[in-house]
Length: 313
Image 1: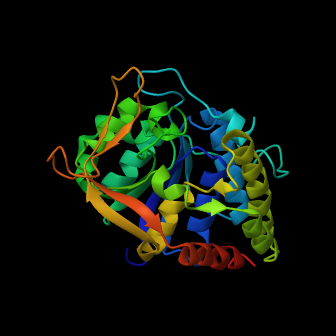
Image 2: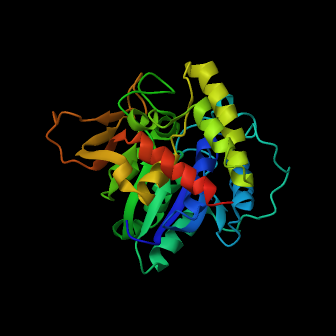
Image 3: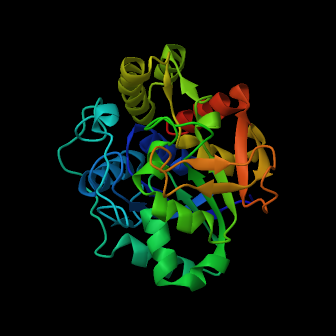
């Protein structure tokens, strides 16, 4: 990625989404945030929008438009992950009841389409929630597809965390994921195989607490809560900051090892709905459609985070 790469962050904040926005907005980032769009996912879309606006207030993103998007998946009932992220979606830190920043009066689909169609430089989409908004934008205006520089998404993996087969973001709207994965747009995928390596532990919290500015203090409170829920529900010794892997990759691709693979989305299976069928060994002989991230460099990853949080001082 060159300097000032243009990105749209499509998210459902969510502790790890919030941290992803913070990383993208930091002074070490080479990203120009064109817009932030929200989707139903971790909690209801209205709550996710409020959370995105509050994070913008915290990091000073005054001029970035925030647009609310899909309230439910393309065909199914909405699925939420309140038990992981709390009732507000950002439980843990003490935040004002209402954000100062307001959402724009435009649907996320339309904002995504307009931004891409009017941009001289191709835009990178960074979806870290269910893919409903991206799929809807593609359905409404297929001309955006060749103009998308890359879709760098968090979702899927060779195993699940919401069902034995499926990761939450893909499970929440597998039909939308299928549209996106079959669109022909370049995709780099950060699934559970790599995001579980981005494990924030108590040691991480201690290190970030030493930075001591408002943004790092906010991240510390997010991580404390997230570490607690991941211990309770998954017996992890830390909280994986899944979504932040996408932005870390865009800032410094050298942090990750990726390989070109075929990935198909299961939408019909009784037990496998939402599964990302990752053809690790090339058994289908189908053309690779995804850059699949499978390894991260711990030292580079956490060093980038420290630098990013310190840049808010």
